[in-house]
Image 1 (tube, rainbow, N blue to C red):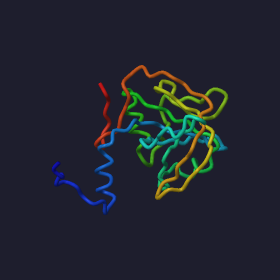
Image 2: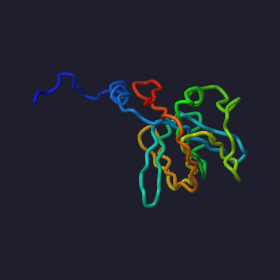
Image 3: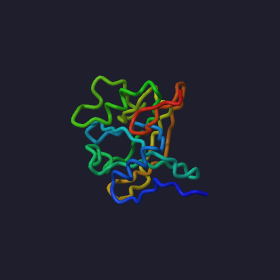
Length: 167
């Protein structure tokens, strides 16, 4: 077997990010509301299922995010799994310095103030089960309490620093 010549040591964040960009990830909007009813949300590709018994999901949130303090105080959040029709929404929620919710098709989860995307492939309403500080991110562990299922279009993915689909 021949060893490839393009093996590089990971000495900086750019090399690490270059390698991670080759990992196709589903895109989500992670949303919450604070005690005053203000809506918060961000585009995230760092969402995983962590356990089946009990059901748990993990969301990575950069501590530099404008939403970090809202999620640090939240008791609940929603993970909205995006489809190809959500490209503009994903871009908007990744932008800085704007009202991410202005003019968007985001509703409140029935019986709550939690914002969610009604036509998401899936939306997981989660109770916060734990928070972990890891490197420059906080990992938010959620226990799904309710789920919305649709999945009618190809998924929206993040690959090579661009939006992609399987279509």
